Length: 318
Image (cartoon, rainbow, N blue to C red; front, side, top):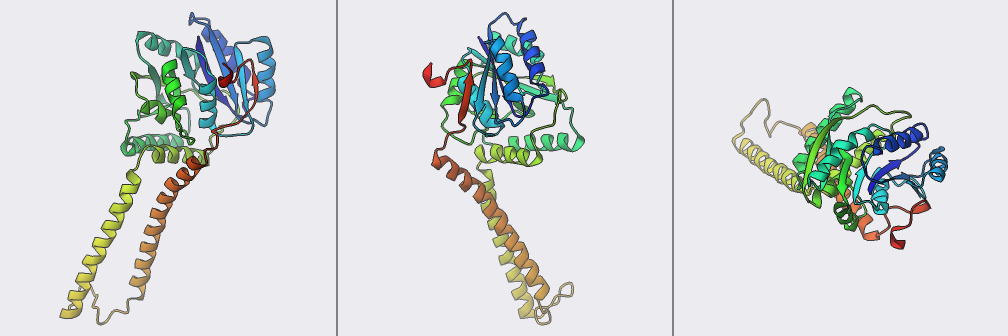
């Protein structure tokens, strides 16, 4: 059994085409399959269309969340409901083509536990492509794990890997990072990411920034180390400047027009205050990101809430 997990949010224009292409591609796999569409609180006809298609094909299973919990929560919900010995994760916009799954499945049959997709080309704007390029390299540099460059959620995993990911307790989930953390035998495969089939992108710039912050904060403590280095550097520079000013005051020297006996000091004082205040606020912001995530974890709220299930049992009822 192959489970295909697809998070969907307001994808009424392309959800039927997704179902058609997955069913057509599955005909060549030689295995049974289930398509698990996780409706992430859609406000259009996505859920209604899924219900209609599910009535005619029990291989299509629908998990409808009570509201929009976000892409990573929806992926997590799909992984929790998957029953296959092999699980694939795709996006609903068909930028991850179902036809590309065949070589990924072949790699799994060769003995790999995780086969993740590495994007070679993107059909997005120059700014967005550059932002993705920069982010993945920053994440790779900062993270304590070796998270593969240019790899997203598109992947194929054995059921044992999915069970390991599902067993992880954290609520703020960054699936591709968790996939790396659990280990097992992993390899990457390149593919060309397609343009969106229909509709508008659901990842706004703000959501992309949040996803980027989740990846860095959840898998790296280096920003906290940087705070200490920034504080140490600013402190050393301040001490050195104080020594220089003291020497100039005692000797009554003038350097580049500056003499402590003559300078009024208002401008320099204000600039120093502004710089130090900005540094403190920046460091507090980094601390706030970590503290905020600790606050979310301590509350122990569920990652998502399910409103409705179609053709699929709750994991605890299996």
